[in-house]
Image 1: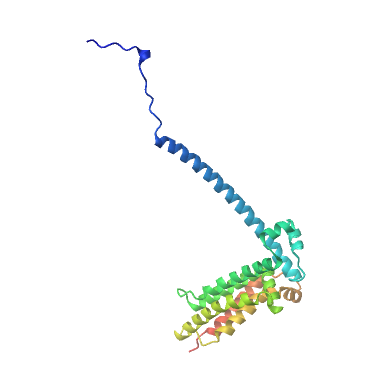
Image 2: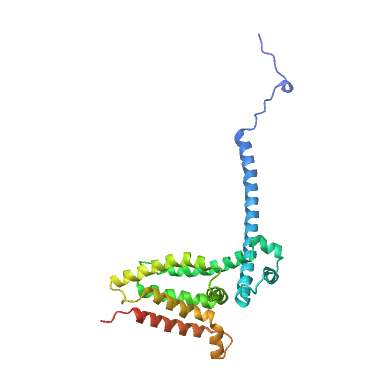
Length: 247
């Protein structure tokens, strides 16, 4: 029996359904774009928060150094930073919290320098020179931060004393162990490591903490680069002479 001819209009066209792959790709693109937008927004917000926090800390350091803890208020710091008191308290819950953060930042830098003295890949003389240079650099670049720490210590460390004990003592013991190792290996002369470190701290930090006195005596407004270069040379020479082995 002959086949019936099928008119073109009567033909059934079956459309292929969209594959899961194509649907998945589209959905994935939307998710990726959304995630990228969220990530960018979060990054911008974090950057803004970080910049404002840094600005608050910068003004807090200056005011604590100039007016002391008791003479500084949250309101005055907020005014200098150009933010409301409420906004500042969002970043730092109280004046003690802000003060502790300032001191934490100072001490963390100093402790990182102390930790470098335990580097076994370098010679003692090189390590001591670098340590003195770093301490003087901090005094030159961050004098107000150093002064805040000095004022806290001079005042009896009533607020930050426990943190000083808990943070500094382990690093001091580690550095003393390094000095004892150098001495036992014949790399340096026999010295009292604790008091040598105290002396280095006093000599380097005084170029921030007592810079006003130095400038008055030198009849100038600010310590110059040459002043710090001269200080570095003298302090390094004194310390290296103290640990030098004389045959």
